[in-house]
Length: 367
Ligand SMILES: [Zn+2]
Image (cartoon, rainbow, N blue to C red; front, side):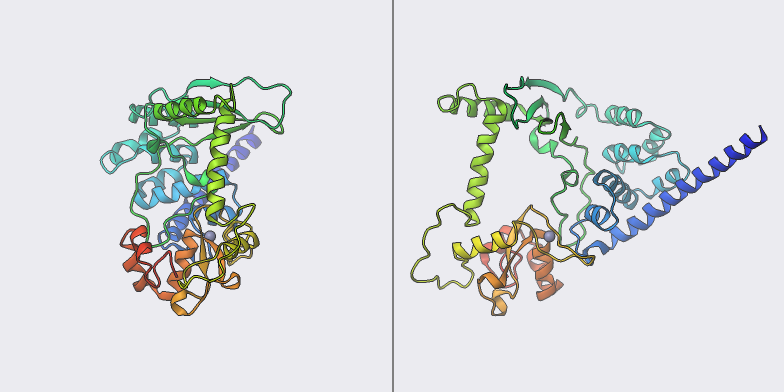
């Protein structure tokens, strides 16, 4: 018995140490994030720093990122974390509902809560958005013979699509704002898309849509009713995605039968000929080539742009060797390195599209 008591004391001691280490880690991480140290290492967000630099899984990185952001705004959550009253899964739920007004009483409601209990507390605090969100409107039977199809299951929502954007990081995309520390946006309350593996090829995809989305889907199905009678939801959405991707390829000059380049090249040094675009996109594999301090490249595939390595304003030209694919974040980061913070701030204080249209030297879109 004495042995068991000793072992129990030992376990309790180790547990206290674990909670303490987690709290220390999150406080240090919050400080690291406050100073945006991850930028120095070439990362586009704290999430990517955690995932790629520290090797955490995307899920673990997401939890810690959320906690570090929460600590910066509500430092009172540190002690409950240290004491083990508040666990990481509850932190994510708490982050969805805590506000400057309710901070005094809401934190304690998540103490010692399981994931499910924390979700229930959050739902209670946000009744409007917790309303029936998961009505299944379509469940597609598996087509026989089964090929590489994706089974799609959708849910309707009272909310409009703008309110149901998932945390980008869980999809592994979308960098944070590159310029200054981001404004204190409401911590995400949205529920992420869920992809559930069914077999090697099949996935069940749950996502939340508006009535407007469903109306558009029905109209698209009607539009395809001649060419694709009785098309599945997946077939309709895939046809739409093919159109979108083809349009995007065209913008990058990635067309199957490129037009011959005009005999006389453009006088505008910012003009990038289609064959140059094509060569750069192909060479760079359609992802951001910004080098990370720890080796490798950023690799982001969202918000990509062509960047002039030597800016046009500094005599650079629109050639394959002087162009590279960068994500939006690293494109601006590169411009800051060349033109300086003060110069760039005058552009980032205005809208990006405005600064682009002006084509000013050193503006984020155009160097
Ligand atoms: Zn990048």
